[in-house]
Length: 203
Image (cartoon, rainbow, N blue to C red; front, side, top):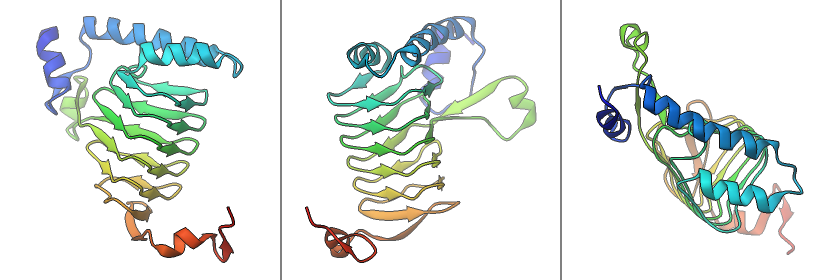
């Protein structure tokens, strides 16, 4: 399988061999940029922002990503909107597109997986994989230690509870939690009155 066919398969959900030499060389170049990003101090935010513009497919203004950041392709296939905050150890398995809307928040140790492997051991031993894009709608909040699996969409404004494994689409405007992640309830008027149990919003 030549390089051009491999790239086409990477972004179309088809099986491909991930050991193509040219592909690996390109991936290593992005891994180097990611390494540089993680070596910068918190005081070097302007330098970090400039690197993110080189690394990511798209990144809007006002994004803040705590180090360390992990990414298979150093963010090459990641599309971030504006004002996104990611706490420590965001993991982006970005072998194909990861799309994140404006004002999304990620807790610590969140993983977004756009790549996976077939169940067949005969295929896996040949280094075969396939990729399905991940979409996170604007204003969503993904709680700490959550995992978003390939092909999943999380709707806008929705909250994914900590420790969730999200293997199916989650609609907009809901709270969802669990393994596997399920909708717990809709976001409602109470959420606009109380921020925690019976504690009223006073701002």
